[in-house]
Length: 450
Ligand SMILES: NC(=O)c1ccc[n+]([C@@H]2O[C@H](COP(=O)([O-])OP(=O)(O)OC[C@H]3O[C@@H](n4cnc5c(N)ncnc54)[C@H](O)[C@@H]3O)[C@@H](O)[C@H]2O)c1
Image (tube, rainbow, N blue to C red):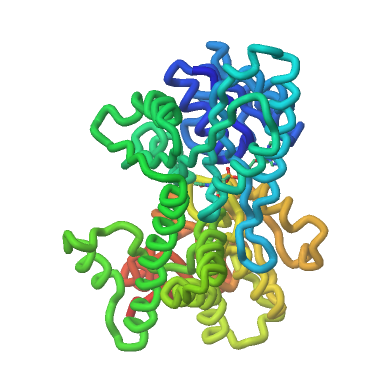
């Protein structure tokens, strides 16, 4: 099949590459010229395990190409996937300007195409599939835009994406399920055919109306965020009441009705999806006059949780941190990604710097993105992003473990002791064994642990 992907970011690039891997011809479009130039050289602009080799293979096989021109991508393809950003607007709702702009452009371009196709125009069919996470009703809005333009038949569909950064290729290749929102049988046929190679082990393709498909993604993310916020609240209680949240988490996770995933307490969820999707769901509720009490509380718990490390530091060192230096391990919102969007590290750095501290931070892959985010910021002098794990520890009063990358799990404690001024560890992800750490001579502060 001939496919175009509009928006070549984390979702678009993985989607395009995986569809090319199953033999389709894929054109990826993006307005970011630097990104496209890099991709044309076979280089991925994002860090995602396993992506580089798949990219290289499919570019070589001439199944995957890149362009900044939507027109050529539209002319070539039968199916277009919109993988555009839907960032939070000022009021928390999903900002649909990118999706709507591209929908207008597609309408205009197809209308021009149909004029030059003359009598053949009526037989041209294009399926426009929204893969971006969009509020319920967006499919209808996109269809309304298309109705303004005549000639080519443009059908809309929704196909929310559930991949996780860090295991995106695996998630796309072996999905738990594929959700497809369609309104005509041809759309269902096309999407079922495209996804058939990915569901051979029995995962279902769940076909439904577009509005339900749009809601699935928000419900899934809000539920996962709820599990984490719930455990963070339990962690606070554990800490106060002398229980150990790790024991509680493991024990409830063995209950088949609960399961072990997304129950890890920490420093709050971040990233490009949970924060914006939870806020957008609350906003959707407001607009529909439905009070989303539970989801709103989930969001509030998380906002508080992002301050938990700073709170522990203030309890240990006092509110004023002038002259103190903190080492930070991990910057990305979770391991195996360079994504810094809404990363809890940003809140921690901000609070520490405001209290007068200096921060030296290291991350295996997110340092370039972090540097870009801090460019031109006032606090720049107080924060350094370094390329070496142990260099940040030099003369540090304490280490803050922010992202649970594998390489932080078994560090060289002797080297740490030589480099650090204060032997104190704030473990934001509970990756260390408190007894072991304390027996080595460190002070240890975890989340929800005795
Ligand atoms: N990142 C994830 O893990 C993830 C997972 C599931 C769903 N989603 C959803 O998928 C959507 C995309 O997310 P992402 O993380 O890939 O975003 P992203 O910011 O990484 O990528 C979006 C891309 O779209 C491009 N773009 C913007 N305007 C354009 C235009 N007019 N024409 C062509 N390209 C344009 C941008 O340059 C960018 O490269 C969002 O709605 C997000 O909520 C993301």
